Amino acid sequence: MKSLAFFSNRGGVGTTTLTFNLAHLWARAGLRVLVLDYDPQCALSAILLGEPQLVETWELEEPGATVKDCLEPLRSGTGEIVPPILTQVADGLWLLPGHLGLGRFEQTLAQAFTQTPGDDNQRALDLATALDRLSNLAAESVGADILLIDTGPNLGALTWAALLACDHVILPVAPDLFSLQGLRNVGPTLRDWRRDWQRVRERGFHGKAQQRLPPHDFRPLGYIVQQHSAGADQPVGAHRRWGDAIPFEYRRQVLGEPDPPAGLTMDQDPHRLAVIPHYAGLIPIAQQARKPIFDLRQADGVGGGQLQAVARCRKGFEEIARTLLGRIGCGGVPGGADPAGGAASTPGSE
Image 1: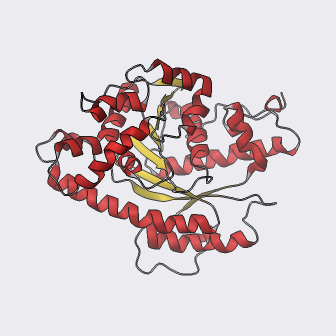
Image 2 (image 1 turned 90 degrees about the vertical axis):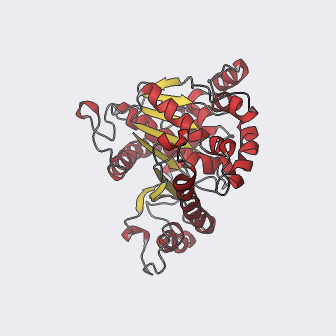
Image 3 (image 1 turned 60 degrees about the vertical axis):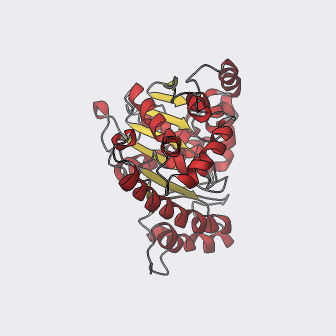
């Protein structure tokens, strides 16, 4: 099984869109896909389930039905992690919904965030590895091939714990000043977290249950560029300058290269995994319809040139799906299906 997170410390760069659409594509290709919503804002859960079903799940407060319910006994000190009850949202696609109350766990976790690296503290270690252990329980229950983890856009304790369950991290960016600054914030933090957690594993796991956990190094896999609105498939005007600064900053800040090559553009950078065009405003329509972008029809409010954009979108996301499966070492799927997912029909004009 491979675990993956799209992470940025700023909103609006497509993390939820990427997770939602790729989860559907990979599931249709025959992979068993599990999505874990570790973001207290629960945006991905709301799109996958719809707000009425999500609220109903919250109100039931059934043990194991949400991330918060699974973690509450551990948070309160009254028990261990509750085995998760996953919601199947499509063939081959499952979700463990998030909960607004997950913020309470983050408050408790913040203490472990500072104690774990230096102290022989079993309680701190149990809290720090809680999301990793919950991820493993959830994945084992459905035999997941790919685990997608959604996190909030911050560098707090909850994000730290979520990334401890990840093999790979992909950074969505936009060609603007804010994404560039985001790389300068995120890159050194990820490197520090990885180094510190490696020390914890080496010194603090011996003889403890955590020693049996598979190691997750949350290694950066690359970045995906979310374009601003433009008349072509390339960033234009002022955004081009920021975009062409991304390869240098990614190598220096995220990979820690002391002297990355200057003058390398996004088009030349092997760490740039994909470029996602603006897609003519299709993303909010898809979120409202709770559909992948490439499934949109006229009945969903798509018309005119947008139908052509839907077709282009399918090809674009299929290419991203192939690229990512190859990068994470998951190039084959059951039954010999196309790893991009070829089961769905071509967008039409219903």
